[in-house]
Image 1 (cartoon, rainbow, N blue to C red):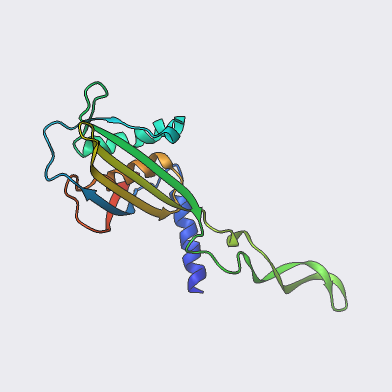
Image 2 (cartoon, rainbow, N blue to C red; image 1 turned 120 degrees about the vertical axis):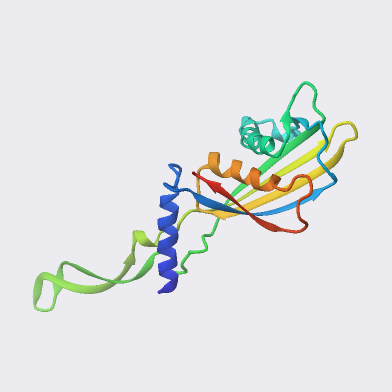
Length: 204
């Protein structure tokens, strides 16, 4: 019973937070881990984006646009003409099994009213049966990851490396990925050691 209730609550929350966004917003919880080679932020934080040969698709430009605002909030300034650092960003999106998934996957016993054969003839009646239900459809659930690597161009040395991950039902990449990049860059240049949780308001 409790599992079914949690499942319905998860479905309601997912519908409420679809691409149109939640009316009052929500906190996007991220698991973040960072590694830094910087003791402090230098005076010049100009950067340009760096792309691997596998990152030449137009989708990479969109991903960089998602990260650009978070980099600006962290104190970096984009300057393709005179950069001091290069920034490489990447992301991964994978549909996974919802934590509200039921082993019955939508099948169960239930009562229904209808017409059919019954004892002593044909007519309306109440009965029980096994069948599927739209309530059994699983909430779409996604695992997302983003990564940011900042490299000093003069020495090719990586000075900051950070990762953020999130699991949830939200489908609007234009809101979720920028928030994840913001979470990943919190604490630059000296973020706490080890994995940590960083919540970012979204949809407000």
